[in-house]
Amino acid sequence: MKKYVISFVLLTCIFGFSSCEKEELLFNQGDIKIEIETGEHWLHDFPLLLGLSKKNPPQFAIWLEDKYGNYLSTVFATCKIATEGWQSNNGNRRKEALPYWCHQRGVVYEDGLLLPTKANPLTDGITGATPKENKTLLLRLDDFTEPIVIKAEFNHSIDFNEFFPENANEGDVNYSGGDMGSGQPAVIYSGVLNPGTKEVELQIIGYSSPDGSDGKVYTDLEKLTTAKTIVGKIKVTIE
Amino acid sequence: MKKILFTTALFTIIAFGVQSQNPNQVAVRLSFNQFEMGYQRQFIRQKIWAETYIGVGNQDINAKYDDFVTGLRIGRYILANEKNALSIAAGIGLYFPNNHYYKATTPVYSGFIAYNLFLGKSKKHSLLANLGYQYGKKDYTQEYSNNGFYAATTGSFKVSPVYFSLGYGFHF
Image (tube, rainbow over all chains, first blue to last red; front, side, top):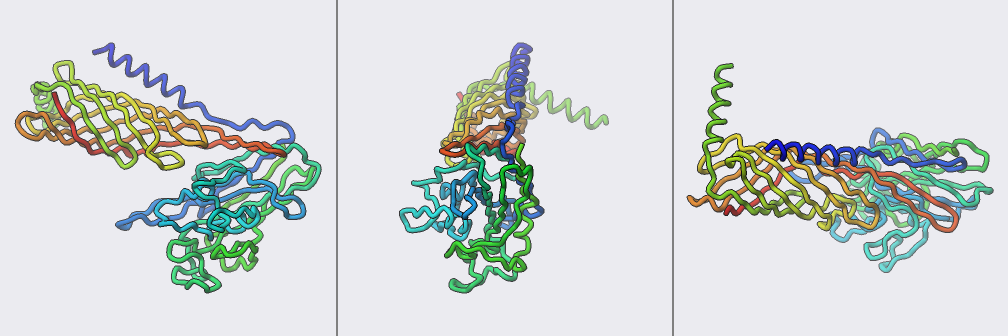
């Protein structure tokens, strides 16, 4: 009996030591650190059933553009948007999720939409689990002699407010995908990183199309409420 | 205080007194995130049981039931009679997420209450319920590179903390 208990405890300790290792990013000189700090409304209540809800983090994408506004590559995108990994969406592709990023990429998929599909998921950039906490990314550019634009777009689903209500009708300017749509549209952050700059903070520049029908940036931010505090801060630092 | 001591002693005697005629059990269990099959054996005068299990889960990034789970559980009966058996148990296992995005083989530790409801007089069949807590967390790194840049980030894979399963056991 003692032998079994000792073996069990030893096995537990061995497993315990192996799971305690924390992964850390190793930054070299010249590497770019992108730190996303969560805001007050990073987690959003998503209703399940019987009055229960779960806290969902937002879908988001971070990408690079050149100084002329041409899309270069995605750095990171959350899994649901990158792989059409929506659950219980009944075939709804959710084109209102991150429309600015989709239009900037300009990749048209088999159904004519600009969103990655299950069959053709995102291949440029890291596809990752949606974090519930702060997120850090390492970026290392082969040639950083020209300014680079870093952009990010964040969106919660069913995040309604008085300007983007649940009962808006398709075709209305504030229609955002219906009762399982976005509610408040995705918010867009942008910052220009110049060679020689040590640090820059991305600023909110507007929101994207509420129903996902175009790739414009809308700047009347007074219509957004909790969407403006999904993100606390996005800091970009050159090590 | 005397009542607590007496009750504890009574339950201990009851647990010691029950001798199962069927010390082996094969079981299937279903929880919200996992399906598993296990083999359990009683020993030390049927006061202690040990179980090994394998199964599939869906707790990783793609939410498909294609992750692999395995582990070992040890329990001790705290209450047992002809129809019911209640145990406290602990387990260690491994969760293998299966996806294209990261590798994060995760040790999982659990502590739970296990309940058997025996069906019929032969005690060959039982309904099973486990309820408790489990902890499993593993950090991982993801990388991407193309013509022009390299990107990396870290993430954490965590198993659901609540462990609740229902199942069926066959005793022999």
